[in-house]
Length: 417
Figure 1 (cartoon, one colour):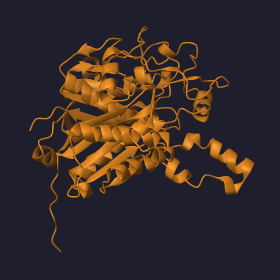
Figure 2 (tube, rainbow, N blue to C red):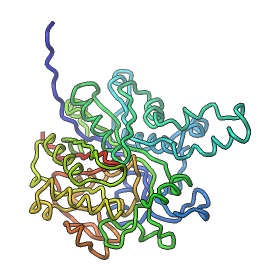
Figure 3 (cartoon, rainbow, N blue to C red):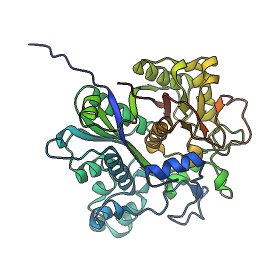
């Protein structure tokens, strides 16, 4: 038996797509980030009057039929509509045409929770009207796998097709899975990221009772305030962020525009508590990501923080950065949380924050942490407050930490051939 030597391929970013509470295209999303646009408001998709939490980061003016035929759109869950739209944007942005010659080498990896928090009405039909009235297409409309499957089916690609769920680490986890697939030659190109549509009465009620969500129902514009001393919880958001990732050989061969390189991903698990985060576990993900990318803490110019706006997370992440970077470098590196504008997209967060990280590097501009008014002495890092700032950015670290300790960190680097 002869052993085969497998080449390790560098993974480049050649396209971006975004559907978010502050813009339904990548260009609109970046303009919102750059100008500090607030995407949080009273819930508009349904009447939230009876709920303990009535505010969220919803996608505005959404029309799925801009991307899908009406019949297909009707049998596609909102989360999968977002995933499809962001994926199509990324494919178009990257100028990659799907053909019979390349379709087998292109795949999709999406992190999502699917429609798990929107199953209530279907149960009502079952219990009130009986088995024969249940929607036969629940799985194809609401199943987690449909984020990846709908996108791949519509564009006709037959490479790896994978769905990831590791709570709020899912979007970054999906990028890591895609990184490994391309590195090892299982695909030449992958559309990867995260998508979520969890703004439902059940999710707002459950997370509200848990104490995770802000209850500033009378002041939604100032409710998401990461690292601020007066923060009281995160804001649930929705949308999708997808990156077109390609092997270096594929991107260069077709003369693609290159945003940068996905240089490394690191993972860890806290193994401590179902809800409370642990700084040593989070630090381990960052350390592993930097090691995977072959960089040192001093090389990182900007951290796109997990920065949820909960008292525990922001304090814990601050401690974790100090552990992973050492205090001197931790105080030096620039940091911001774009969740201050979009809210927290849960499984989709790593997707839109990856897009934000790459755009920050591409434009040389650090998005702000809006609503940062009262500095918290326990969150004393170099936070960029309220207004975007120009900066030279060659390497970005992006954190995604899931409830219960599932951690993932990605490293994006300016490409040098």
